[in-house]
Image 1 (tube, rainbow, N blue to C red):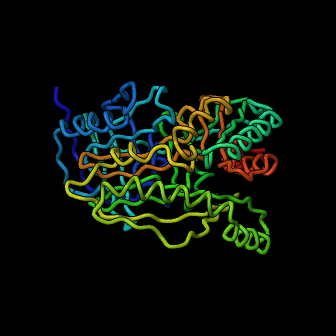
Image 2: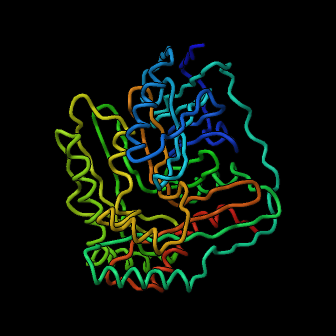
Length: 403
């Protein structure tokens, strides 16, 4: 039986977190974006090298096969596939086409798309008291992780590797199920400029746009180079100035910007980046960031094709990519799963937005697994890098662990 998608305008306000609920799908920034419920179609990632490129073709074919009636005609209307794509090529993954999607733009336009279900919006979720006690345990001891960083530094100083990203995780165990809606609401309040996401249990608030494709315009907002925030405006301003002036952090940042520009250029008639990085300040950390923007050649590549080309960037892997992945495999001792992969959505026209899946947790009932990673270069200090991961982990710890 052929699937049919119908998109109509909504004449009332919507809260996308409430639409998604605890078990739905969400990709939102500053109140705009998409939320989904149900499952009309699930598309498994193929196995083997180049699987993201293959998945892009399969998703495009699946969405094109859905009969569509769209009275709104904006990016994200009609059938949409959500995905939280794994970091590694050997990790299983999939994209989901929800049976109900609600969208909201920054100018207030709202719509609902349904596939094979009624168009009544779900009732707002009822949240309970949630957990009252928690345990937080690192999967690998801080000392062992510092030793891994020290080993990576030795390799960086001895060889052709310019940067490698090493991650660590902590596990939170609660005395009751962790309420995803409450976590998302806390993340929205604490990080209003971040991209909130919830896809198949991966929940987070990323500040980093991997790629967006709207029409023939492509954008990416890579971040590399970080310093913790203190809560003291004067001290944080000094730290931001130090970050901007840091030769180490500027070099790490430029590696990522150059890679993004070189990767996107073959798809574009024009592409450029900001001449100087800026500071993106979050509640817990500050990052160096540079906006990359270009015009895609005709016909424009889809959002998923651009994801396939860009992932993984040096910001979450290192550079050169092959050598960095080998060091990660040898020293990290961590199954990243979907952490540091790509999370977002793509529609039947190839428009879409994908963030880098950082500042996140895999939530499953009473258990949550949180991740943080750092870019390691030749003059990195293991103790400083450990402190930085702790600052990054606070984003999700503060949203999950509540007194």
